[in-house]
Image 1 (cartoon, rainbow, N blue to C red):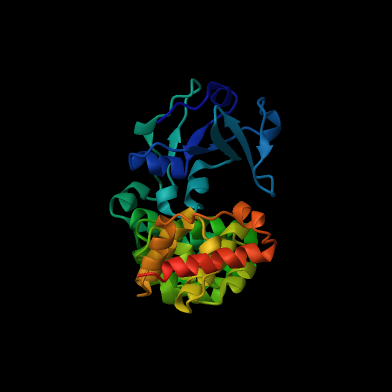
Image 2: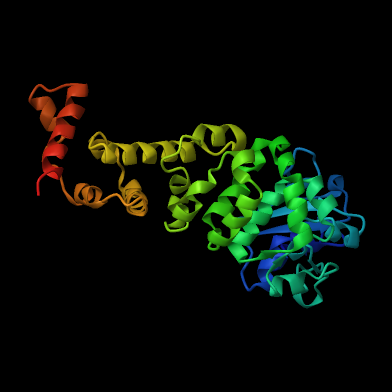
Length: 331
């Protein structure tokens, strides 16, 4: 684990590394960013920071490409026990020279034991999850990324307060959802997502979770929404990036065209979309050979060549589609 920059360590009192950076270090992974807590008032900080939260409770700073989020605390024990899950409720002390005392981990909720036993548990699930229901989605992300089992009381609280997710600022929802969908243990997490009725509250259809588990993680959003018409509901409820919705809609359109022997897709598909399309077609038991043939074949005619033949505008696209259709229908 890297040292905390001295400009931070020397200017902040009673400094600790908390949260994900502690968890990742215990798991043997180098943190990419750091959450820090201090008793120093923000107005006394002598280095440049920016507001990290709308409430003003956290400020951030970048030093040599690494992000540090800084929050204030009064009682270390209280601060750790009110966090989302025990695996994130640990702290490393930081000395004034920036050294992080990994061997002196503060662990009031037995987070190390839960991490070792792969348990997702909240120290006070009723209060901690109710106070910020986005923690339910973060829980799904942790299950999907770390192969965790949910402790019974924590799962009950997650189910109880799942309806409150609809009241959360939509901008906060997609990041944990994306982590859940793209995690290594998505299959396990998807079962919890079904129990939480993720479909009803956020418009993410559970019918295709099994399909999504069989494709590359970069194709899972497209697989989840394959042959469904609920992307608009998802867009309204979870505020995903427009590129995600666009990709879902394009993939559904490609699948529909191939099933119905239409060929507009031949001039629209991008190289990076082809492999996802092939995976989804295969899972849907649709022959993906036509896509692979399209991507391995070079069309000898270009739009510029057609213009020289006095073919203009939309007629260029129509002509190219016809040529692709003739080529792809050849045995």
